[in-house]
Length: 186
Image 1 (cartoon, rainbow, N blue to C red):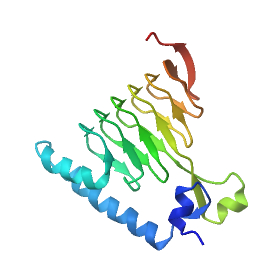
Image 2: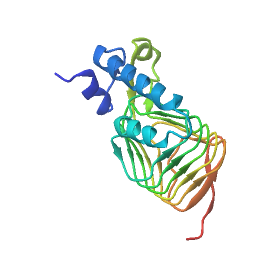
Image 3: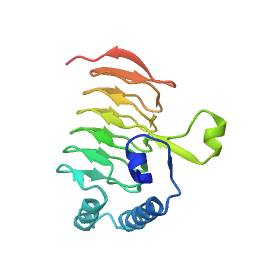
């Protein structure tokens, strides 16, 4: 029989109030509090704490605090990635962010979702869909990336967009809902 965590990570309906998952989220919140409370000149200490929060990351990750996530361990980040102020990553399932990606302020990345059927939704169960963001991507400020989205390499998502469908590589896309505006030059 699968644990609730195994169900969560495989995209099945799971109980988010499970004791083990609740404990993991609490530990993440406590670690985030330490990170978010550090002074700007405590970069070395912040980097040590980020190693615990996001163990699957490349070199030169910069996160401008405050930053928020559910687990941290479900986030995989390439090298030279930049997060601006006040980003939220609901990493109930895997979130992959490629190298040299820039993430603007107030960006929200959601893998968590709920059943459309109200009877299932009222049961309290939820599920998740993985998100993949390519290399050399620029996500503008205030963007919301919905569950299950893939954004291709070198793509730019305009500020304030709500990404509800995949966006291929080498595109400029914007809007609510986000749509491809034009192809970018390589």
